[in-house]
Image (cartoon, rainbow, N blue to C red; front, side):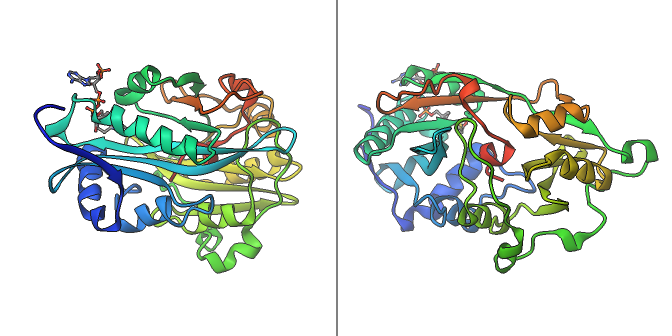
Length: 317
Ligand SMILES: CC(C)(COP(=O)(O)OP(=O)(O)OC[C@H]1O[C@@H](n2cnc3c(N)ncnc32)[C@H](O)[C@@H]1OP(=O)(O)O)[C@@H](O)C(=O)NCCC(=O)NCCS
């Protein structure tokens, strides 16, 4: 740090334009992931688990680095809740890289989270930052490999529209949330509690991702369209209800994309529904789940078998 005078301080709202510019330049954007003020507000301010813990590293007037921990909660099998943060957006300005800013910001954020009574950090880092997290005490939980199944559309030689036939199924507004929430089952492992407030925020208030709900008897699915290369797919974020296989079949039968993809933890009823429906692991498409406990925990959170999660828990789209 000898060649510049660096200050680490909490993010302030006037930093936003520069921070967004830094995130855009460092992490990029896609059609469904635009680093707009609206996305930032959704992710870091209006999250029902609380406002994110955010730090900046500044060199005079220049934002040299940004670090955000999103607030989260995970429920254990016995109903007890773990206070968590998710290490999400982090970027160092290209002119300031390899001088320890990411490390300094992350360690400062860990201290702040610890002081705040947070139990654990978790994230799915990209390969550029994975080694850095391991060096700061993170542990690898395991590889998350989504499963996929072709749909009827694959036989029709129809273009991949990625759309369900009836757009009226799209969840349009938060006002509709009353009829768009499902009762959650009990946690079989670490699981985001699907409260009405969480579901409303997660699936109706996202500024760019559009979710569709498919209902089948007493079960339901929430899915979103996505691109893999130039091919469209439908990703099932959540399955709810006592017979998730019914909602899964209905979703697959109605999808106009060639594939439906999903991830649910081993041992969950939703995973059983995927396997009984012929879903197979997608080669190459993986995420690495990592954790950093901030105090000794009774549960071995580094064991993937202790987790009960879906794409809805992992993605922030
Ligand atoms: C990933 C990223 C945040 C790292 O930021 P950074 O501030 O350069 O990170 P650090 O300086 O703390 O550490 C990076 C490397 O520099 C090394 N380093 C740190 N201080 C150093 C110094 N004084 N001299 C030489 N090397 C140093 C670290 O050991 C580390 O090495 P490694 O990558 O071989 O493990 C940054 O490259 C970036 O913004 N990338 C694009 C966005 C991104 O991928 N974000 C992560 C999303 S999960």
